[in-house]
Amino acid sequence: MRWLIGTVMIAAALALAPACSDDAVTPDPEPVLVTPPAFGEPYDKLSDWHLFADPLLQLPAERVVPYDVIAPLFSDYTSKWRFLFVPEGETVPYADEGTWEFPVGTVLVKTFAYADDVREPEGPRRILETRLLWREPEGWTAHTYIWNEEQSEAIREVGGRFVDVTFIDPLGATVETAYRVPNTNECADCHHQGEDEAGAIIVGPLGPKTLQLDRDADFGAGPVNQLDQLSSLGLFDGDPTPSSERERLVDPYDPAEDLSLRARSYFDANCSGCHRQGGSATDSDLELDFDSTDPTTSDAVVWGVCKTPTSAGGATCGNTYDIVPGEPDLSIVVCRMTATELDQRMPPLGSKIVHQEGLALMREWIESLPPASCTP
Ligand code: HEC
Ligand code: HEC
Image 1 (cartoon, rainbow, N blue to C red):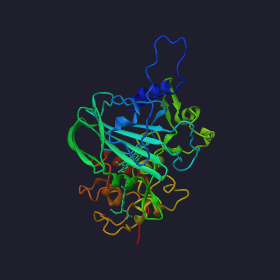
Image 2 (image 1 turned 120 degrees about the vertical axis):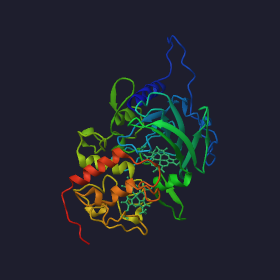
Image 3 (image 1 turned 90 degrees about the horizontal axis):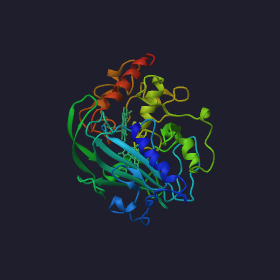
Image 4 (image 1 turned 30 degrees about the vertical axis):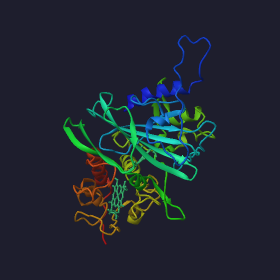
C-alpha cells in the first residue's frame, strides 16, 4: 500500500501546487474540480462528483488530498485509498484529541479494491466500492458507490450487495468469496456518534484524527509527516502540536513496537468504532478505544480483563471472561474473533474472513499480560 500512497501523493501535490506559469512548455491538463450536488441530493453516479482526475488510478481531483492511517481497519485483505476534500476557503480546527471537526461541504472518501494477488497491491486489481461521508448542514451522511465490472462507473447503492471476487491471500492461497458491500444502515453501526433529540442516529468520521494520521507519507519528494503536509496545505486553522508532544497509534503489525501499544492500536482501529462511549456497542460496557485501553489511566475491567459479558445473548464459547490474562484460549475476545457463526464474530460487520495477523497479535498480547486470577 505504501507505494500507492506515494503515487497518489505526487498527483495531489501537483494538483495542489500553484497553477500554471507563463513559460510552461506543455499546457497543464484541464484541472478537474469537485462538483458537489445540492445538499440532500447525493448523485446516483460517482463520476458526477468529479472527485478524481483519474478514477481508475484513483488520482484525485484538485483540493482532494490523499491520506493514510497508521492502523487500518481490516476488511478481508482489500486495499484502500483514502482522501479528504474540504471546500475552498474553509479550514479544520486542529485537535490532538478525537476526530477532527470538518466544515459543511467536506467529503471524505474511501475506495476498496482487491488486488488479484494481495501480496502485490501494485499489480492488477478490481475496484469494488467507493464510500463517502459527506458533511451536510444537518450532519454527516453516508453513501457508497459500487463499481461495475467494466470499471467504468460506480452507482450509489443503499441496500448493500454481495460481489463475487477471487484473489490470492497473503499465504498464496486462492480465495473465492462474496465480498459484502454494507447497506447504509450498517455504515451507521460503526460510524455511530450518538443520537439526536428525535432519536435519529448521528454518524461521523472515524479515521481523520491526530492519533491515526500522524505518520509519514510520500508526497513526491520523499517521506514527510502527513500532519505537517496537511498544515502546509493550509488545512488547519492553527499549528499542530509539536510532533514530540503528540500521542499517536503504532503499526499493529510492527514487531519492533511495544506490544501493548500494538494491541491498543489494533483495538482502536478495528473495534472502537462500536466499542467506545457513545458507540453502538455501548451496552456491552466494553470500551476498546485507545484512551480507554490505557493501563495507566483506565480500569482494566473497562477493556475486558476479568469482565463477564453484559450483553444479553452474547456468545461466549463457554468462556467466562472477555480477557483472562495469560490465557488467550479462555478469553472471549479471542473466540469471538474466530467464531465461525458470523452472528457471533467480532467485528460483526466489515469483514468475514478471520484476520489471522490480528488474531496472532491478540493472542501474543493476552499471553503477555501479568497473570491474574479472575474470580466472580
Ligand atoms: C466495521 C465497521 C465499519 C463499517 C460497517 C463501515 N465503516 Fe467506514 N470506516 C470504519 C473505520 C474504523 C474507518 C477508519 C479506519 C480506516 O480508514 O481504515 C472508516 C473509514 C471510513 C471513511 C474514511 C473517513 C473516516 O471516517 O475515516 C469513509 C468515507 C467511510 N468509512 C464510509 C463508510 C460508509 C459509507 C459505510 C457504509 C457503506 C461504512 N463506512 C461502513 C469502519 C466502518
Ligand atoms: C459493528 C460494531 C462492532 C464492532 C466493530 C465490534 N463489536 Fe464487539 N460487540 C458489538 C455489539 C453490538 C456487542 C454486544 C452484543 C454481542 O455480544 O454480540 C459486542 C460484544 C462484544 C463482546 C462481548 C463483550 C461483553 O462484555 O459483553 C466482545 C468480547 C467483543 N464484542 C469484542 C470485539 C472485538 C475484539 C472487536 C474488534 C476486533 C469488536 N468487538 C468489534 C459490536 C461491535
